[in-house]
Amino acid sequence: MAFTLYALIQTAILFTNAIAVLHEERFLSKIGWGAEQSIGGFGDEPGIKAQLLNLIRSVRTVMRVALRSLKAVLVDLSGTLHIEDAAVPGAQEALTRLRQSPVAVKFVTNTTKECKRTLFERLRRLNFDLQEREIFTSLTAARNLLEQRAVRPLLLVEDSAREDFTGLETSDPNAVVIGLAPDHFNYQTLNKAFRLILDGAPLIAIHKARYYKRKDGLALGPGPFVTGLEYATDTQATVVGKPEKAFFLEALRDLNCSPEEAVMIGDDARDDVGGAQNAGMLGILVKTGKYRPGDEGKINPPPHLTCDSFPDAVNHILEHLLGSKQSEN
Image 1: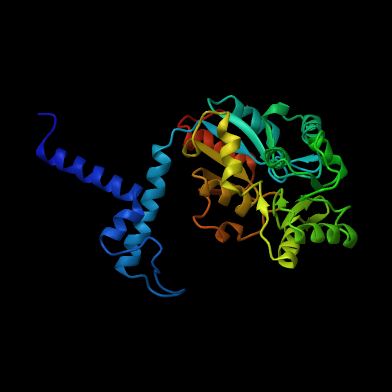
Image 2: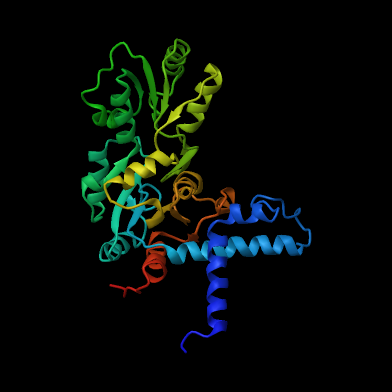
């Protein structure tokens, strides 16, 4: 017979192991272990228990990757495809190869220093193959929230980004919206925001990035200013951009795929990769843009992959996640 008793037993064991691995927390709790249980201090010799926990987590990761059916790739823009008016070397060609594969591609960004139209025109000048409708920005997410709440925002964003809020009533504001606005981060404007929040206006952060990459080096993002207002007013901001789970789910909504069927590529370990993985996606961290050595160790779980640049991330997707190696053009 094709199926021997040994083969049947082996199949049952493998199936049971798969269920246990994919439901790690439930399985470990049944035997009195916790998935987050301490495995010893730095420099300690790991015991059998610690080694088994690490093995289960490693196999879990491999099996989850193997069981995925990849349908979509979300791509960060600033720091991943380009830095201001300079493209990451090889990024245009890599994007073309990715588009030739059977996956949907969408571009997701926290950029708030310019409107989506200006950003799209910048990318087209850099010879990237994309359409404006394929870009989902945190400005779009912020506008959607403002319309849902029917509030009048005090917009702390750059003048070049205000186009994405055209049509919204902004006189006599009763909400504070803050993005990246170096020209408006002065005492007078921030104090106006402070007073509005004290009077009950909600604080809406387009995102809370700590810093971003410019051609002349790293620069402060809106995060420190949002945190300052939170501290001064003893309130908590509503964040609409990355790394919020809702942002990633909204980006995937019109692609008709679940987070488990998508991969995120970005240069920000926390906002791009950590946020995507918390939403159920795989995350690939690239060592361009704002990346600094050791960033991959700042999130848990760690990135699915950390690689040098966007072209390397595309190579990994084509060769390992889609199961068909693409030839170089």
